[in-house]
Each structure stands twice: as structure tokens, then as C-alpha cells.
Image (cartoon, rainbow, N blue to C red):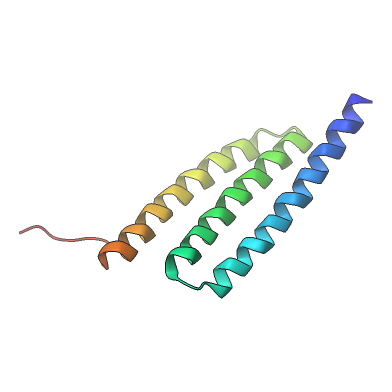
Length: 96
């Protein structure tokens, strides 16, 4: 009984997070500004991490937890890089 309830909750959460990814995709496409698109992409990355974690719970495979950690690191670095580009117009500057 508990296993069935857990499976049902995980499946419902997977559907919910997938729907949220679609809504964020709309924000990425429609904009209206570049920061809105960046936030939309960051939210999609967070939702993909949530999907990987839920899938790890569903299948009892620890590999997806590792994948989630790597995706979180990549998502953080890309968000910082894009934010720096949007604010300063350049990613790497030389000091001289």
C-alpha cells in the first residue's frame, strides 16, 4: 500500500515538473527581456534536476543522483556566466 502511494506521488510529481518545464519554455521563447529568458533557462535546469532526482527515487538507481549533482554544478556555472555577460557585456576581461 505504501509503495503504491509513493509510486503514485512520484509519478504525479514527474508530470507536474514536466508541465512546469513547458511553461518555463514559453517564458524563454516569449521573453520579453534577456533576464527573463535567463531566469526561464535557469528554472528549466532546476526542473531537469528535479526530474532526475524523482527518476532516481522511482528506479532506486543512485546514478541519477550523481547526474543531478553534475547538472546542478553546470547550471550554476552557466547562470553565473550568462549573468556576468548580461550585466558587463563581456565574460572575461584582461587586467593590464
